[in-house]
Image (cartoon, rainbow, N blue to C red; front, top):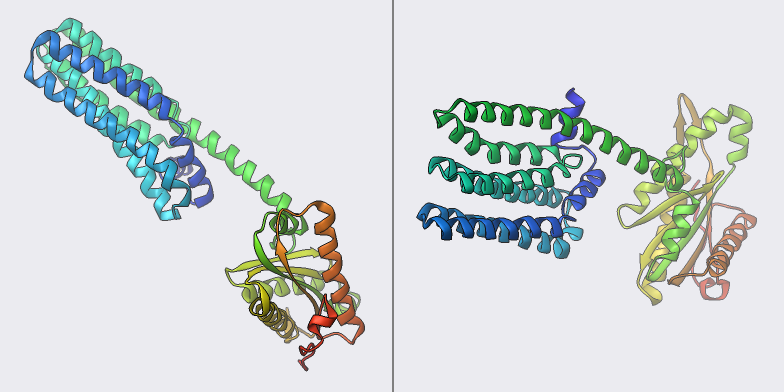
Length: 383
């Protein structure tokens, strides 16, 4: 039950939270329809009865309905670019708007019961239930919004019903309260099942694009990022020098832990500005957006140099000290929507540069275009 409550109010994974809020904001046709219907209903009640309070409530219905529509339109423009905290704010905006609209419809029913206006009560209650049924469709997304909105919607109706002397109104008010309790439990169960499905979907997607051993993106994720990139990018292929003897001497469990430490170091080299991935075995790839020309080449060279030096520093796996080296191949290219053959060509170019560095003795870097890189130092003593 604690997990259910946690899912109902704040999910810990921002990516799933974002997807849930995006689903909330797909309800524009539904919100517009119930808003228009409610405004017409409120105006009709005010016109037929001539009651000033009906008129005031109708204005409130119009304001809250218009506010909800405006917020849904604004989200289309700004929501996709919101930070994680911004997504939380957008969720609260939706919840506050829905609750305010619920209050306005609840007050229509309250006024109708207060005036003993039977036709008005039927009309207002019909609008309230139509809105509630529409909100139930959001129960599997963010149930706190549904429960809060239903509470403020039914609250004035139940209060007015208990103020009536007839027993039938009290029975009806009790039934509404029991309906809210049923809605509460149903929405939480729906939410739990829905979020578990989202988590399973995200887990499958992550497995398809993540290396199981190191947690880095895998080859598929790297190729996708390269194909969907824009501008100029630096591609750095890295292979460890002397990794096989580590496996042969200490076993694969030590080799696996060494690869995890390599992945951590490469992640620190990349920071937040690019991608480090594991291609397979002890081969890794780095991808970083750079400027065109010499500036981009200097950034690529600096990245390759930093990676080679970082990976050549001593490791401690358990109580076993280990040293390996690293070699790198470097390529700077204009990223575009690469056809598969072109992407394969780029990877072959940087791979040839990598193995040229290994044949030259390892612990160094080579450019894919030897002539352009011949004037740049490609080796550093990291011993």
